[in-house]
Image (cartoon, rainbow, N blue to C red; front, side, top):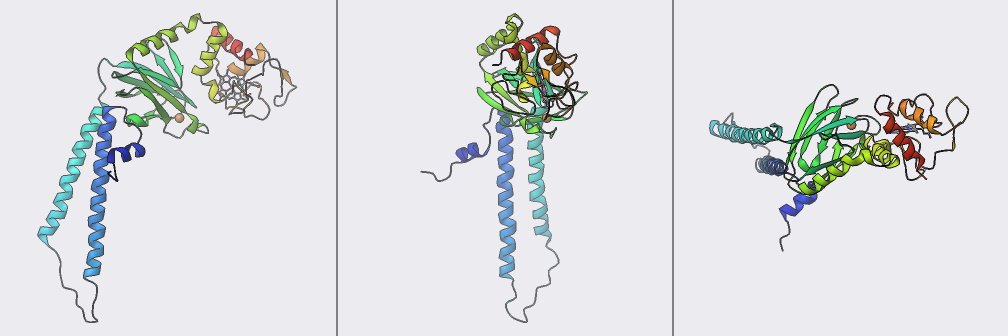
Length: 319
Ligand code: HEC
Ligand SMILES: [Cu+2]
C-alpha cells in the first residue's frame, strides 16, 4: 500500500476539478508548490549546513576572505530566471485560455445584488441563486451588479471575476462533469455577503432542455405557484423564512397573513393585501418593530402587477 497518494491528497485538499481549465490551473499550482518546497529545502538546508560547517571551532579561527564567485553567481541567477520565465509562459498560456471567450457559447446573464445572484436566460427564464447548464458545452456569463461590487466565484472551475455596477464583465467555462457546484461571492459586499451563495447544476443536454421548457411555463402556473417561483428568483428567501418562524435578516412570512404586526412609531397594523403590497414596493413606509430601515430593497418598478399579485397570493398560502 502506498502511504501517500497524490491524487487522493489533492482531492481532499482542493475542490473537484469541474473543467479542463481547472485541471490546468491545478497543474501549474502544483508545480509552483513543489518548486517552492524544493527551493526552500535547498536554501534553508544549505544555510543551516554552512552555518554548522563553518562555525568558529577555535578562538583563532579565521574566516577566509571571499568576495565573489562568478560561476556560482551566474548559476543562481540564470537557473531561477529560466524557471521564472517558464512559469510566466505557462501562466500566460492558461490565463489566455481562461480569458478568451468562446464563440457560439450558451450565453446567460448574471446579476449580482445584495445578497443574491440572479440569472436570466435568453428564452426569458429567470432564476435566483440557481444556475443550470448543460454538460460539455461552452457557457458564457455576462455579468453586472445592481448595487455594489461583487465577485462571481466557482471554486470547482477555478474561475473568478469581479461583478461591477454600470458595466459588463464576463466569464466562460465548459463543465465536463455533471453534478452540483458552489458559487460564492468573493468580494465583501455587506452584512449578508457570506450568505450570497448560488448552486450551479451541470446536467445532460436533454435534462437542460426539459428544465428550460418547464421553467418557461411559469406564466401558466396558478398565481400562488408563480409567486413561489418569484419569491425564489427575487431571493426574498435569503431574508425571509417561508417555512417556519425563524428570523433571518427580515421577519418570517410564515403564518403571517391576517395577523397583527407591530411597526415603528405607529399603531399595530393588520397584515392584509395592502400592507404586503406596500411592504414589498416601498419597504421603508412602515418598518417592522425590531428590524432596520433600508435593509430590504424596494421592489417598486421591478415587479409587474401580476408578479406582485402572485407574491401576495403565495404569502397568503404560507401556513
Ligand atoms: C436584504 C434582505 C431582504 C430582502 C431581499 C427582502 N426583504 Fe422583505 N424585509 C426585510 C427586512 C429587514 C424587513 C423588515 C424591515 C421593514 O419593514 O422594511 C422586511 C419586511 C418585509 C415585509 C413586512 C413583513 C412584516 O412582518 O411586517 C414583507 C411582506 C416583505 N419584507 C416581503 C418581501 C418580499 C416579497 C421580498 C422579495 C420580493 C423581500 N421582502 C425581500 C429584508 C428583506
Ligand atoms: Cu456580493
